[in-house]
View 1: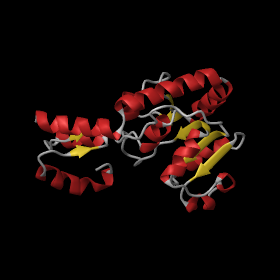
View 2: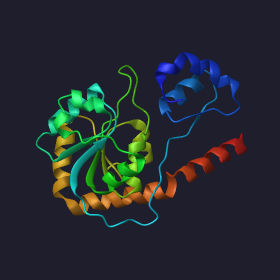
View 3: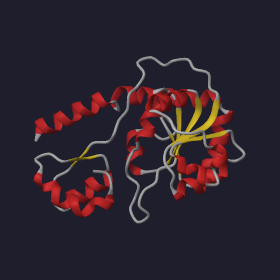
Length: 219
């Protein structure tokens, strides 16, 4: 479970299981405070065994669904070479000119491979903290691409800030860091490489399954 909107059903179903796992750090902590023993297990991704040399044809990209926060942030990107994929609802927003269509999973990873920066603006319920490391973090680092992500506690615990991933907390900081890392290729690609190594080592689905079974064995 990763949606606070399902809270009423979560507090009922969690005690029914011997082992209950959540991809949300906030929900895990909240359930445990109510004695619903829950284990935190973040999502993961697939990582290239060896990095493929791919020409970077996009400066800044995003693939995902429409939210109010994303519209507000992405409207600041008109001066950039910004490409946007996702659900058709993007065509009904001020970002329509940037919209490129929908992608399959394989197409998403190929777009990320060809991009200098994958932008990740995480969103959630307004009254609750964003504490999920979403798939985008692992999909992009898994193919060796630099990720610039909105700051949240869960993701910062998984990737070292400014070493394996870079974070921002405001629109102004996002724009400043986009300009900096687009103009400093060596530094950007060094961070991207470190992010790939981290995902390949500890953030794959194989790693998560090993962690899950180890948790069960220890309980």
